[in-house]
Length: 176
Image: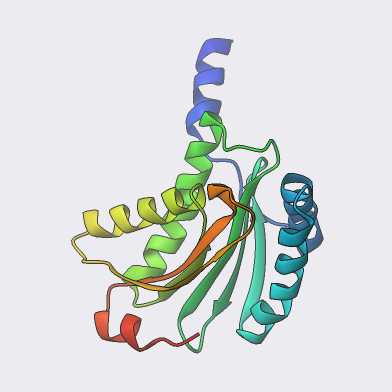
């Protein structure tokens, strides 16, 4: 058996995307941001806001990488609540998995959905990648900034809320 070939294939095949309990995602957030009690307190307060957005919440994982989002089918909105890696960072081996999840979000945007996300310096790269993939499909992505929140004086604790979509009028008319 060619073990080098099997090892190479494992690097390019996406891990299965599975639904996980929200508590599992929350545990990882607390583990990563736990030194900032103020940020954890704020994130817990925002839990109520997420639930008020309507739709169905999903927590999915590919192993190391975990995504949490809400889908509101009626409004055609996806609220990306967060992305976190169990190891503390997204590893190169996770990139195929992340690409698979990006594809799901790209398809939603291409079908007229609006993505809403509160991003920090790390998760902004994910949103920029989604924008780039949509633009590679020949569609212009419109982005609207709704505001920002800052905890401590660290860039990774500064979050900007943005909206993305291909219908400029819909993007500009969304109020959260």
